[in-house]
Length: 498
Image 1 (tube, rainbow, N blue to C red):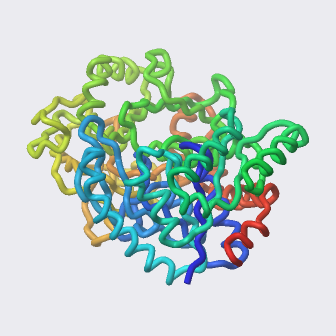
Image 2: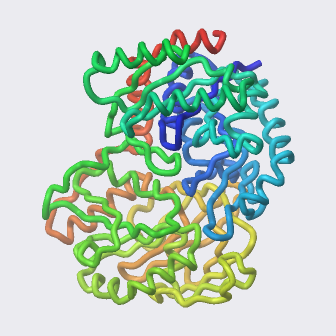
Image 3: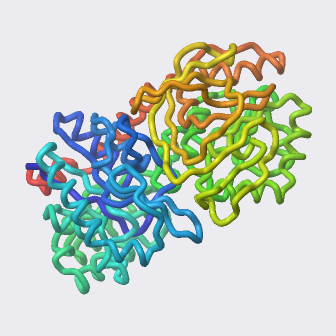
């Protein structure tokens, strides 16, 4: 029977995901069978498990930190915002329905039964469950419908730790207010709170110590650690992590420049994090004409609302701008929704993408796309075709509703969920697109893409230096070591009853 610990925060982005990841790796290295759990996550950063289930990217990374394969049980409900339509609800790894907030809350009893059933199974499979909250547990207008902070902790009688981000200011007031509101409105949960943690501290700890002592005396809660600010371990938006230093200065003319379009409904922007490893690359997110015209590679990323983002590009006259940039022999890449946008026409007969039935694409690839209600989610292995970079087998994953037709000539793809083999992606000159997320984690492929542009600039190619998955493992261990140095782990284990 598993012990459980809830990590909650004073607000969104306080450091909950970061801390669960670190604790998972610390406990895994100490020999415990540990798993992450977030009952409900809202994010456009998602990951596809081996069985095709879709979960939040943060929970997939936490599973890796815990030394276990990601699965839907670690994130039973994933909410993917769809603008005015509400959110697409992913339940147990599969699309359930699109609902507004009020519609979602009307189903809270059914959803809680699903969550509770999963928790029953998990607590029999693992020794420790690390529960992650969302936002703040003290949103007093939502206490009756809260599935992620309140019910899971009460069900497992899990001790609760609160983390606060001191870098935003007002951390003691936020911590005290969180506890005080819960004591007034939900005493049963407030009694589970056993300590607090300060995150992102920079400065002299001696100057903070009097405040810690006063707050502990006032609140009755022990301080279990003060985590230092480390910009190389930054937390991205929407519970996505990046362990790569995004603040590396641009080195000048000899570097390569990659511009990713910051679409309004941009999804799975973690696709491009591997480029932060490469010291000869500047990666920026920009719509600026000057940036696009000076780029070596322009990437149109995935989108949760392809029609809406395509309209935005058309309003910018982006096709004309791209054609002008192509005169410099740049490379244009479309990933998933970006691939669809590069095509000639997008059909929406089932109103998956709003009310419009048809929309012209950018017309740079000879493909057409039709959107269907069914969603494709699978990991894949892909073999590049026609001398398209390396012939090595690549790993990636699909998350999309659109089906594109045309002369597909980029990859021979095998879907790992059902063994289906087919041709995928389209290349025309220096423009290409694919449905495959995650392909830039393939180190040789990534380096060959960059070396092509180095050679065009008269620069020598560079050998593969960084292995993405090795760097990820190293970073997880470094994160765990950092947190272990600054947290009272033995006291936390005691709180857990270990």
